[in-house]
Image (cartoon, rainbow, N blue to C red; front, side, top):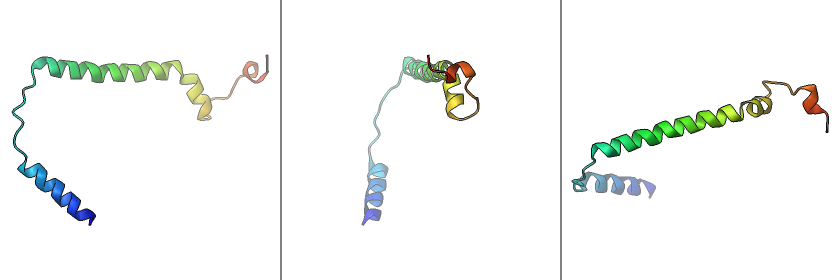
Length: 70
């Protein structure tokens, strides 16, 4: 039964009319800025939490000062 859904979706995609859409150069520039901004945000988040990530993965041991309660 599920194979009919895939066949129907394929049929609808092949007979769909063209969209006649226009994407100006500003759209490509905005898309590039969104992608680069996302990469930069992930890099900043990793930089801020790098020590906690290493401790969670067991790659770094906590120092004696961190083990003692204050």
